[in-house]
Length: 341
Ligand SMILES: *Cc1c(COP(=O)(O)O)cnc(C)c1O
Image (tube, rainbow, N blue to C red; front, side, top):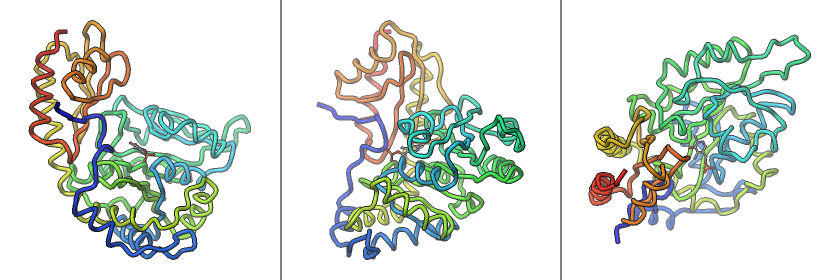
């Protein structure tokens, strides 16, 4: 039976060439500072993003949580989109790990504007208020539909943050999708105080994320990584997959975007699809009206070996990635047409 997995771009398996790079990697104990491949990955990623240093971590949740921990003190407030991953999908980590709270704003696509920052920042001298310390922007915005924010917006929000002396963190789990779509380069993002990137999403590495920032910030982050249990020993095998992904899997994200566009076009033709978020990158979020709702469509597809995620009773998500091929796409197209809504 067909096995077409459109749930997420995290489901990819390493390619043979990536496996070969992993197997050939020189490794050492990275907690003791001895793993040359981890060091190479950290330096390479930092340089590409115009940052001083990098820190290799097991997940993007950990890189975000470390960044928040280093930027804030307990009782502080963080500004983010109401759709932000740090607010919706990190297990309440902002409260649990750092004792901070969030103040949310922005639009239905996960974007935050400079006006939002000016409106949401707490008055500095008001003793009733939690001191605002940090603005977190997500690009692409996952729950917004893979929205790409574009450099002008990122700069405006950064200027607003700076005008209030707030730190500015980028949750760039899928930043390469945004860069490829916009035709921008990572070093254009040098105005962020810290950047988190995922190697395990569209780039196709099996595990790993990086936190990037100034040297002293990363040095403190390294202490927090240990505290969170994220210090890894011979992690060079994983870092090698990350280096391979950064060198070979960035430009090809354009194929995933083109495939998502095709899916979006098919959905536009279906009577039971009543709303779609703008399709900017490798995700398609759509709302259906049908008996049984989103779970019914999910089950219909699953019966034909096609997996997608139902986000709630009405919204579903299709994600494209490098293990999606033509046969998977045409199977999806056919199955969508035969759903009896
Ligand atoms: C996937 C993701 C993360 C990190 O997720 P992990 O599974 O912990 O690596 C962070 N932010 C966004 C926007 C994501 O999509």
